[in-house]
Image 1 (tube, helix red, strand yellow):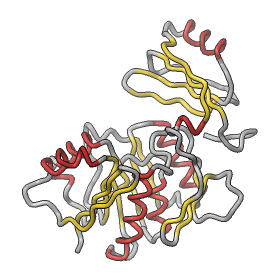
Image 2 (spheres, helix red, strand yellow):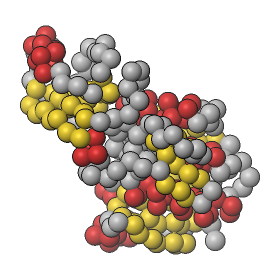
Image 3 (cartoon, one colour):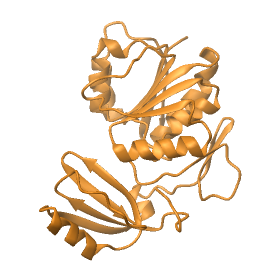
Length: 269
């Protein structure tokens, strides 16, 4: 995440280590620590070759990959620039112009500026008036928290935003506070591969890998909400997802695409 003296991202330096649970790192150039599948990625604003090698020596672990790259390359060449969806303009926190939502995209998967996130936000804008006043919701795989923040700006009274990654949860909490919706958007670290949070809400927004979506589709508990906004997949995955739906799924309201990504909206007519 951004902290003084940094106001935006330029180059980032990543160090991939073959363990997790490393001691806390007190370094002003540290952007974040990403832990997953028994590995750790340390991400800095500047080169840290010597300190990282010493960290590995002290903790009996190995550095197996490192990279020096432009921040835009971290996001597969997608430039982080403002965009507008209905009444909401979204911008990175370093943009000087007014925006309804400003977020630190950080270095998490799901930085808020990806086409699948935009598809979900567009669907929420189109359908939120069908929901009760002060609606409740789940944001599954929240990343930076943009969808939960967007829901709060559109009138939600309570959104639970979950992600399995600790860094994503930390970033989402910071972004909710930055947008003054921290009392509406409640961020929790949660592994959807093991269990589901309570799904009896008005809307579920799930921007997830297609295999995880398919697994959720096969869980009866998943189908307790009124409206579903589902993305994170491409056309080639739709056959698997269709086959994973229950025998009597909610009604399809929309199937749209952007840059080879798809969104489904199911539920309330």
